[in-house]
Length: 119
Image (cartoon, rainbow, N blue to C red; front, side, top):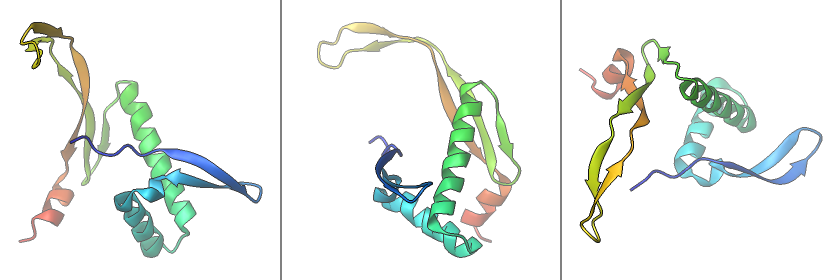
């Protein structure tokens, strides 16, 4: 099952520079991360959401340019090349060519591994 896409859809303008959005906060997982960051770092949820948006857009831009991102202790974002191959249409059983493509990859760092596997 594919994961839910994260998007921001402006729904209202409040004040000069604050825009209410629909999308990220409707995803309970992302909303809980925003709440956690805001609580841990004593900032507003809007600031936490902006930090997450900045991080994700920066990673997407860098990976899109073919760069590798290494966050020591957390992990590495990189690109894996998937070779072209012959597949099969499940409905008609006819062979078809699947073209080569780039696949984003993430490899967890040691601190992250240790956090989920306490000793």
